[in-house]
Image 1 (cartoon, rainbow, N blue to C red):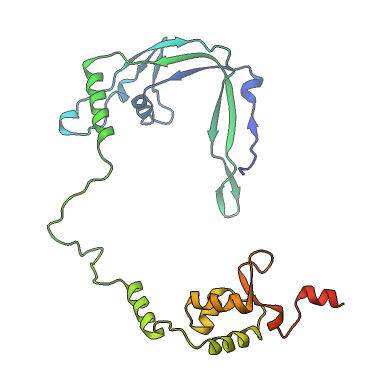
Image 2 (image 1 turned 90 degrees about the vertical axis):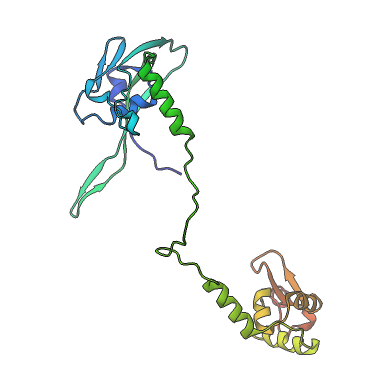
Length: 255
Protein backbone atom coordinates (compact mmCIF):
# COMPACT_ATOMS: atom_id res chain seq x y z
CA UNK A 1 0.00 0.00 0.00
CA UNK A 2 1.14 3.55 -0.74
CA UNK A 3 2.01 5.87 2.12
CA UNK A 4 -0.55 8.48 3.14
CA UNK A 5 0.25 12.06 2.10
CA UNK A 6 -0.98 15.41 3.32
CA UNK A 7 -2.74 17.56 0.72
CA UNK A 8 -2.41 21.35 0.73
CA UNK A 9 -5.96 22.75 0.51
CA UNK A 10 -4.99 26.40 0.07
CA UNK A 11 -6.73 26.49 -3.33
CA UNK A 12 -10.06 25.53 -1.77
CA UNK A 13 -9.73 28.02 1.07
CA UNK A 14 -9.10 30.80 -1.45
CA UNK A 15 -12.03 29.63 -3.63
CA UNK A 16 -9.82 29.39 -6.70
CA UNK A 17 -11.54 28.62 -9.99
CA UNK A 18 -9.44 27.01 -12.73
CA UNK A 19 -9.92 26.16 -16.40
CA UNK A 20 -9.42 22.60 -17.62
CA UNK A 21 -8.03 22.89 -21.16
CA UNK A 22 -7.13 19.99 -23.45
CA UNK A 23 -4.13 20.80 -25.64
CA UNK A 24 -2.39 18.93 -28.51
CA UNK A 25 0.58 16.76 -27.58
CA UNK A 26 3.06 18.80 -29.61
CA UNK A 27 1.99 21.94 -27.75
CA UNK A 28 2.82 20.45 -24.35
CA UNK A 29 6.18 19.34 -25.77
CA UNK A 30 6.94 22.88 -26.90
CA UNK A 31 6.04 24.22 -23.44
CA UNK A 32 8.70 21.97 -21.90
CA UNK A 33 11.32 23.86 -23.90
CA UNK A 34 10.43 27.20 -22.30
CA UNK A 35 12.69 28.73 -19.68
CA UNK A 36 11.75 28.19 -16.03
CA UNK A 37 10.33 31.71 -15.67
CA UNK A 38 9.93 32.46 -19.36
CA UNK A 39 6.77 33.23 -21.34
CA UNK A 40 5.11 30.33 -23.19
CA UNK A 41 2.41 32.36 -24.88
CA UNK A 42 -0.70 34.43 -24.19
CA UNK A 43 -4.42 33.67 -23.89
CA UNK A 44 -7.22 35.76 -25.45
CA UNK A 45 -9.99 33.11 -25.64
CA UNK A 46 -7.33 31.69 -27.97
CA UNK A 47 -3.82 30.61 -27.16
CA UNK A 48 -0.99 32.19 -29.10
CA UNK A 49 2.30 30.33 -28.86
CA UNK A 50 5.32 32.56 -28.39
CA UNK A 51 7.71 33.07 -31.30
CA UNK A 52 10.56 31.41 -29.38
CA UNK A 53 8.68 28.09 -29.22
CA UNK A 54 7.18 27.73 -32.69
CA UNK A 55 10.34 26.20 -34.18
CA UNK A 56 10.21 22.40 -34.22
CA UNK A 57 13.29 20.27 -33.67
CA UNK A 58 14.59 19.07 -37.05
CA UNK A 59 13.89 15.39 -37.63
CA UNK A 60 15.18 15.31 -41.19
CA UNK A 61 16.87 17.45 -43.77
CA UNK A 62 13.56 18.50 -45.35
CA UNK A 63 11.89 19.28 -42.00
CA UNK A 64 14.39 21.76 -40.61
CA UNK A 65 12.08 24.74 -41.30
CA UNK A 66 8.88 23.08 -40.04
CA UNK A 67 7.00 25.12 -37.43
CA UNK A 68 4.12 24.27 -35.15
CA UNK A 69 0.89 26.31 -35.42
CA UNK A 70 0.91 29.53 -33.44
CA UNK A 71 -2.82 30.32 -33.19
CA UNK A 72 -5.01 27.90 -31.16
CA UNK A 73 -8.66 28.99 -30.72
CA UNK A 74 -10.58 27.62 -27.71
CA UNK A 75 -13.65 25.41 -28.09
CA UNK A 76 -15.69 25.74 -24.90
CA UNK A 77 -17.49 22.78 -23.30
CA UNK A 78 -19.91 22.78 -20.35
CA UNK A 79 -18.69 21.33 -17.07
CA UNK A 80 -22.04 19.62 -16.61
CA UNK A 81 -22.88 18.10 -13.26
CA UNK A 82 -19.33 16.94 -12.66
CA UNK A 83 -17.17 18.08 -9.76
CA UNK A 84 -13.56 18.26 -10.91
CA UNK A 85 -10.43 19.59 -9.28
CA UNK A 86 -6.84 20.28 -10.33
CA UNK A 87 -3.96 18.96 -8.21
CA UNK A 88 -0.26 19.74 -8.49
CA UNK A 89 2.54 17.38 -7.55
CA UNK A 90 6.05 18.47 -6.65
CA UNK A 91 8.92 16.50 -5.08
CA UNK A 92 10.06 17.88 -1.72
CA UNK A 93 13.49 17.83 -0.11
CA UNK A 94 14.67 17.85 3.47
CA UNK A 95 17.96 18.95 4.94
CA UNK A 96 20.23 16.64 6.90
CA UNK A 97 23.82 16.82 8.20
CA UNK A 98 24.96 14.86 5.13
CA UNK A 99 23.22 17.23 2.72
CA UNK A 100 19.88 17.60 0.97
CA UNK A 101 17.84 14.42 0.77
CA UNK A 102 14.56 13.69 -1.02
CA UNK A 103 11.55 13.99 1.25
CA UNK A 104 7.87 13.14 0.94
CA UNK A 105 6.20 14.50 -2.20
CA UNK A 106 3.93 17.52 -1.85
CA UNK A 107 0.41 17.47 -3.32
CA UNK A 108 -1.61 20.67 -3.50
CA UNK A 109 -5.18 21.30 -4.55
CA UNK A 110 -4.92 24.27 -6.92
CA UNK A 111 -8.66 24.85 -7.38
CA UNK A 112 -11.98 23.61 -8.66
CA UNK A 113 -12.71 23.39 -12.40
CA UNK A 114 -15.20 26.07 -13.46
CA UNK A 115 -14.68 25.94 -17.25
CA UNK A 116 -13.69 23.26 -19.75
CA UNK A 117 -12.12 24.03 -23.11
CA UNK A 118 -10.28 22.40 -25.97
CA UNK A 119 -7.30 24.09 -27.55
CA UNK A 120 -7.44 23.38 -31.30
CA UNK A 121 -4.90 24.59 -33.87
CA UNK A 122 -5.82 26.44 -37.03
CA UNK A 123 -5.48 23.99 -39.93
CA UNK A 124 -2.75 25.22 -42.24
CA UNK A 125 -0.26 23.63 -44.63
CA UNK A 126 2.35 23.69 -41.87
CA UNK A 127 -0.04 21.92 -39.48
CA UNK A 128 -0.83 19.22 -42.05
CA UNK A 129 2.90 18.65 -42.60
CA UNK A 130 3.30 18.34 -38.83
CA UNK A 131 0.53 15.74 -38.59
CA UNK A 132 2.05 13.80 -41.50
CA UNK A 133 5.38 13.79 -39.72
CA UNK A 134 3.78 12.60 -36.45
CA UNK A 135 2.05 9.72 -38.25
CA UNK A 136 5.33 8.63 -39.83
CA UNK A 137 7.04 8.70 -36.45
CA UNK A 138 4.24 6.71 -34.79
CA UNK A 139 4.33 3.87 -37.33
CA UNK A 140 8.12 3.64 -37.31
CA UNK A 141 9.09 0.28 -35.70
CA UNK A 142 10.84 0.51 -32.36
CA UNK A 143 13.26 -2.25 -33.29
CA UNK A 144 14.88 -2.92 -36.64
CA UNK A 145 16.48 -6.12 -37.85
CA UNK A 146 19.47 -5.97 -40.14
CA UNK A 147 21.73 -8.56 -41.70
CA UNK A 148 25.33 -8.50 -40.52
CA UNK A 149 28.09 -9.05 -43.03
CA UNK A 150 30.38 -10.53 -40.40
CA UNK A 151 30.11 -11.69 -36.81
CA UNK A 152 30.33 -9.07 -34.06
CA UNK A 153 33.22 -10.06 -31.81
CA UNK A 154 33.55 -6.90 -29.75
CA UNK A 155 30.73 -7.69 -27.30
CA UNK A 156 29.49 -11.25 -27.63
CA UNK A 157 31.68 -14.01 -28.95
CA UNK A 158 29.94 -17.09 -30.35
CA UNK A 159 30.76 -20.27 -28.46
CA UNK A 160 30.21 -23.90 -29.40
CA UNK A 161 28.82 -24.70 -25.95
CA UNK A 162 27.92 -22.55 -22.97
CA UNK A 163 29.52 -22.92 -19.55
CA UNK A 164 26.38 -24.15 -17.81
CA UNK A 165 25.94 -26.89 -20.43
CA UNK A 166 29.55 -27.99 -20.01
CA UNK A 167 29.16 -28.09 -16.24
CA UNK A 168 25.96 -30.10 -16.51
CA UNK A 169 27.51 -32.66 -18.85
CA UNK A 170 30.55 -32.95 -16.59
CA UNK A 171 28.35 -33.53 -13.54
CA UNK A 172 26.30 -36.08 -15.43
CA UNK A 173 29.40 -38.06 -16.42
CA UNK A 174 30.84 -37.89 -12.91
CA UNK A 175 27.72 -39.08 -11.13
CA UNK A 176 26.69 -41.42 -13.92
CA UNK A 177 23.20 -42.48 -14.83
CA UNK A 178 21.07 -43.61 -11.90
CA UNK A 179 20.61 -47.37 -12.03
CA UNK A 180 18.16 -49.28 -9.85
CA UNK A 181 19.93 -51.04 -7.02
CA UNK A 182 18.67 -54.14 -5.21
CA UNK A 183 15.52 -53.48 -3.23
CA UNK A 184 16.99 -54.62 0.10
CA UNK A 185 20.02 -52.39 -0.38
CA UNK A 186 17.78 -49.37 -0.97
CA UNK A 187 15.68 -50.26 2.10
CA UNK A 188 18.81 -50.43 4.24
CA UNK A 189 19.89 -46.98 3.08
CA UNK A 190 16.42 -45.55 3.74
CA UNK A 191 16.14 -47.06 7.22
CA UNK A 192 19.62 -45.80 8.03
CA UNK A 193 18.65 -42.29 6.90
CA UNK A 194 15.39 -42.26 8.90
CA UNK A 195 17.35 -43.20 12.03
CA UNK A 196 18.97 -39.78 11.81
CA UNK A 197 15.91 -37.68 10.86
CA UNK A 198 12.19 -38.28 10.97
CA UNK A 199 11.23 -36.32 7.83
CA UNK A 200 12.79 -36.14 4.35
CA UNK A 201 11.67 -34.68 1.06
CA UNK A 202 12.05 -36.78 -2.06
CA UNK A 203 14.99 -34.75 -3.37
CA UNK A 204 17.00 -35.46 -0.23
CA UNK A 205 16.22 -39.16 -0.47
CA UNK A 206 17.37 -39.22 -4.10
CA UNK A 207 20.67 -37.60 -3.08
CA UNK A 208 21.15 -40.20 -0.32
CA UNK A 209 20.23 -43.32 -2.27
CA UNK A 210 21.23 -42.26 -5.82
CA UNK A 211 18.10 -43.99 -7.11
CA UNK A 212 15.58 -42.92 -9.78
CA UNK A 213 12.66 -40.88 -8.43
CA UNK A 214 9.95 -43.24 -9.68
CA UNK A 215 11.68 -46.31 -8.19
CA UNK A 216 12.26 -44.50 -4.89
CA UNK A 217 8.64 -43.36 -4.61
CA UNK A 218 7.46 -46.90 -5.28
CA UNK A 219 9.44 -48.16 -2.27
CA UNK A 220 8.44 -45.23 -0.06
CA UNK A 221 4.75 -45.87 -0.67
CA UNK A 222 5.23 -49.30 0.93
CA UNK A 223 7.23 -48.25 3.99
CA UNK A 224 6.38 -44.57 4.36
CA UNK A 225 3.66 -41.96 4.57
CA UNK A 226 3.57 -38.75 2.52
CA UNK A 227 2.63 -35.55 4.38
CA UNK A 228 0.55 -33.40 2.06
CA UNK A 229 -0.26 -30.74 4.66
CA UNK A 230 0.74 -29.45 8.05
CA UNK A 231 4.09 -28.34 9.38
CA UNK A 232 6.01 -31.09 7.52
CA UNK A 233 4.24 -30.62 4.20
CA UNK A 234 5.77 -32.32 1.10
CA UNK A 235 7.92 -34.72 3.18
CA UNK A 236 8.03 -38.47 3.80
CA UNK A 237 8.17 -40.35 7.09
CA UNK A 238 8.14 -44.03 7.97
CA UNK A 239 4.92 -45.88 8.73
CA UNK A 240 4.37 -46.69 12.45
CA UNK A 241 5.33 -50.37 12.00
CA UNK A 242 8.77 -49.40 10.64
CA UNK A 243 9.62 -46.74 13.23
CA UNK A 244 11.97 -47.18 16.13
CA UNK A 245 10.56 -44.03 17.73
CA UNK A 246 7.15 -42.64 18.68
CA UNK A 247 5.54 -39.80 16.77
CA UNK A 248 4.38 -36.64 18.54
CA UNK A 249 0.75 -37.82 18.54
CA UNK A 250 1.69 -41.23 19.99
CA UNK A 251 3.78 -39.60 22.73
CA UNK A 252 0.83 -37.36 23.69
CA UNK A 253 -1.51 -40.37 23.84
CA UNK A 254 0.99 -42.31 25.99
CA UNK A 255 1.36 -39.46 28.47
